[in-house]
Image 1 (cartoon, rainbow, N blue to C red):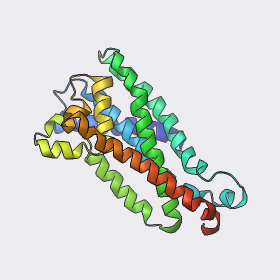
Image 2: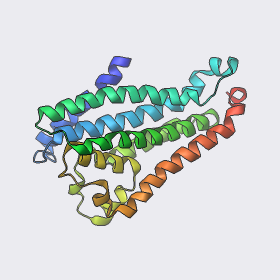
Image 3: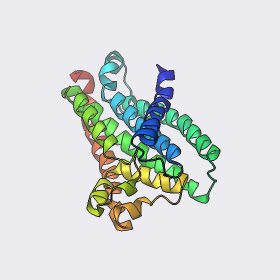
Amino acid sequence: GYLWQVVHPLLLFGVLYVVFTQVVRIGSDVPFYGVALLSGIVLFVFLSEATSQAVQSLVDREPIVRKIQFPRLAVPLSVVLTALFRLSLNLLVVFAFLLAAGGDARVSWLELPVLIALLTTLAAGLAALLSALYVHFRDVKPIWDVVLQVIFYGSPIFYPIDVITNDTARELLMLNPFAAILQQFRHAVIDPSNPSAAEAIGGDARLLVPLGLIAAAAVVGFRYFDRKAPRIAEEL
């Protein structure tokens, strides 16, 4: 239910925090590691919920889609907006943890709306694409679940980007739009000692790649959905 969706990232945070500070000890010496871990989980849970729940959104609402005329894009976007609301609540918890841990308010916090807008754009584009694809291809959901796991372990959620000492590997990882957004969030919001996304990826110019992928996800997702929208009711 709704309560579980709010509590879930906090429970996941608790488990991973114990594992990576007491067992593996990746983050035991990292300043504000707990807050950094929580922020990564909160942002990933938003992306995961917004996209995985959008996959079946049209099929789950088949009676409404068949009987009522309305913009079909409203269905997957409503899922994204609901996830965005939960994200805003969870971010309040992140800021509370940060201030309690001794973090300071900084001007760079003004980057937060831009970062959330980029993440929401990515999620909305993917949600539109996946929901339209699922109408025809029911294998989309298990495939996307695997992709989300790859994104989770391939992003610096529970480890600092500095642990990847190979420059090429680190720069390739940072081409992932989610990883770039997360890294800049940690630099701008949590602790400026964290490398910025530009520093981690090897220069400002290379940020055009993850930004381009976000734009591509939005353009392809919305255009594909728009092309399929007139026939969605018939094909459900």
